[in-house]
Image 1 (cartoon, rainbow, N blue to C red):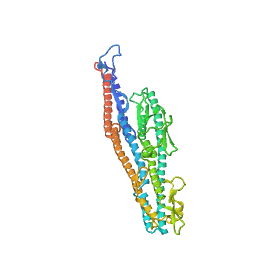
Image 2 (image 1 turned 180 degrees about the horizontal axis):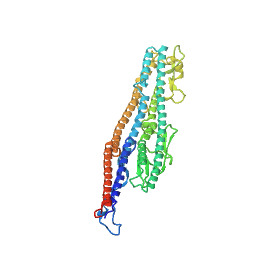
Image 3 (image 1 turned 90 degrees about the horizontal axis):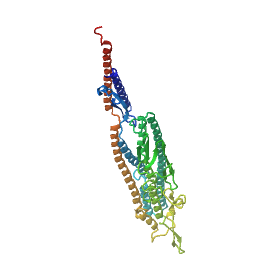
Image 4 (image 1 turned 30 degrees about the vertical axis):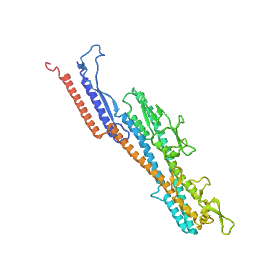
Length: 501
């Protein structure tokens, strides 16, 4: 025969289970907008007491109806979708950062919306044409001098803009590395806290019930970390996770490694691991984009830290290549003349007038190019004491004009000066378009995976509202059951056996 009060215990368990269900549903609804929150649910099972432990086996019917037991509060999460989302976020992080940096480079070397090198070359060529028709006029020589100074200033401004972008990206990368190190440390600390919580409750790493709020914080950090580089997460038996970052074990239990950022003598940057000093082998993520854009020298990459990607250094080299080729060509156009001893006669000296030079006296480049001191001080420097060409005294001017349309050899290009400027500007546009297109594609995939993950782990107001009504009705039914049991016992205790007294 069943215990008289077993029904009360069944009702009590039902009230407790449904009360917890109402509480967890309310918690889900209240966290509908909380970043990183994972929907929770109450896991229950039917109480099944066995009679095998009893000395005398009883009828199973006597053990039926023992009620519900609360197994725990679990998270609804799909580890496969977590992995797919983090893998895709690596690509999003790379193309997002690379696209931003390429936009800055495009703005710095703009040839469309602002006066650029092409316009300065056109002004320089126009001044040459004007001087050709007035080769003995100092005023026209002065116009050419002004156009030359404008060209050098624009080139120097472009180079300074690239230097500013380089410094900004190094600064931003330093912040990004600090954020990665902070995330690694926080995950390691959460590992320790989660393990302690699981141990204190007598659970294990294989137990599906853990400190859900701490798990949410850890998962959110891992999601953020994935945009910086490839993240591989492996669950440990004690509830901690081991994390590989770009193929290197970065977190193990409560221990974590750190990234070190340093500048090299070649002007590049190096990212290495604090524990080993080895370089971080990055294949994707925003850190990889920073590294490619800061160290990117294109096909000319030779240093140990230089990247074959076309980054900031690549475009600084393009400017330097333009400046050096331009200066070399025009510095060998005006041959200096000397008297030959005959009345009015002159001879060539084999030396040329320097029209462009390095401001610091070193090798000429985009950052130090200027009009030579002699020409800058004397506008007529370009038209006096020159070797005449036949009957004309403007052969040197014609030679300079011909250079504007002559195809010359650059390091990796053969064409005119304008065509060379066009070539690297086209490269900028193609790169930016590639990164933007890939960003849109990877972001769309990541968004789709996130939507699928949210459909599993996110809070749905409609679904939670349905659950709330279900738990409320079940709670009311359990309360009604307890009332019915109370009435039955009142009849049994107070009203049974009255007849015949």
